[in-house]
Image (cartoon, rainbow, N blue to C red; front, side, top):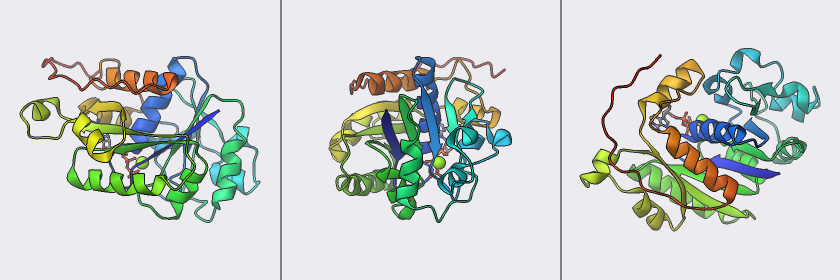
Length: 250
Ligand SMILES: Nc1ncnc2c1ncn2[C@@H]1O[C@H](COP(=O)(O)OP(=O)(O)OP(=O)(O)O)[C@@H](O)[C@H]1O
Ligand SMILES: [Mg+2]
């Protein structure tokens, strides 16, 4: 079982989006996937995946022994992935208790741990349960600086692999030299990129609908990221300027 924490330092850069989309792609490829919400204070993995109305127990209940792990898992509507939600409680959960819950998920191939923003207790709790890390950043200077700090912190954990996902790339801006390219960001951070995700309005749209539109611009990028993770490769093609096309939303 591979336990991969999705972290960033800076808030709002796309950790939950990457966790949900990457997990669903791997589930579509036939892997058994669990998406665990380690953002216990500001949980939203359940909302983004549209599973919130079906949450009965959460990760805090499992850690406190109030229910069994299978009772807390919620089926995803969009894929065969299962969601281990956090319902806002469990702030007091120790890193050891959290790790125990994650380790009890023995019947799966991948567990993705959606890390809270920041580098405090919640970060430590989420990273301690993982064997690999994906650091998400956007091309903004503040996100890159926070990713750098997080990469330094991660080097103190015994992780098998640390890689980078550059999110919200605007190919038109990178082509004009107005935005840093993903490979420059990866070089600056000294960490190889496993995924380059374009800015895509469909991401916001699907999070409101709780589902993934098939024609999303970012879909191919998430599929490439999933293939890299499954094959343990880091083949990243910088996205070319996309052709403008009309989108049908529904
Ligand atoms: N590639 C993208 N294109 C367009 N919008 C995006 C993209 N990735 C993420 N977003 C939007 O950015 C916002 C923040 O994303 P998300 O919640 O995944 O970030 P986060 O890092 O998990 O935030 P937090 O630190 O608060 O947990 C959301 O509204 C999401 O729809
Ligand atoms: Mg989040």
